[in-house]
Amino acid sequence: MHLNLKNINSKEIMPGYHGKLVHAETMSIAYWNVEKNAQVPEHSHMHEQVMYVLEGEFKFTLEGETKTYYPGDIVIIAPHKKHSGKALTPCKLMDVFSPVREEYK
Image 1 (cartoon, rainbow, N blue to C red):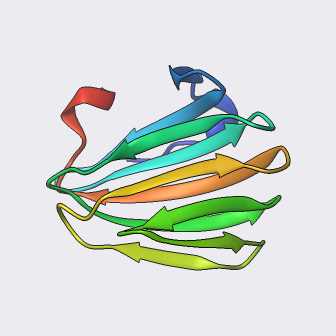
Image 2 (cartoon, rainbow, N blue to C red):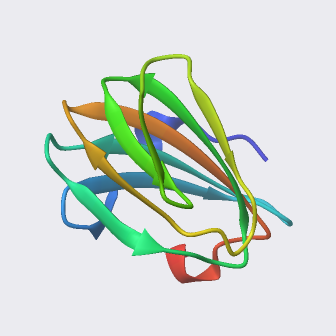
């Protein structure tokens, strides 16, 4: 299968989070354009997640520890760990989830 991001429609999954979503057999990849000040409330899920900051400054809290992440930073989030975030600037993020995020389909 071959895809190109410019041909994938964006979905606003939550306020300010516009995602282009790709689903493989055992994982999902989300390419996010995030509006400044958009927030993800604290939550957890069964999926292992890897977050990669492509552009901008993103404040992220994982299990009560808050840090600001910048382009090139990668955060690994184990399943069921509580996390939240806020875009301090407009951001581009990439999240990889395993297994597939069925609710994002």
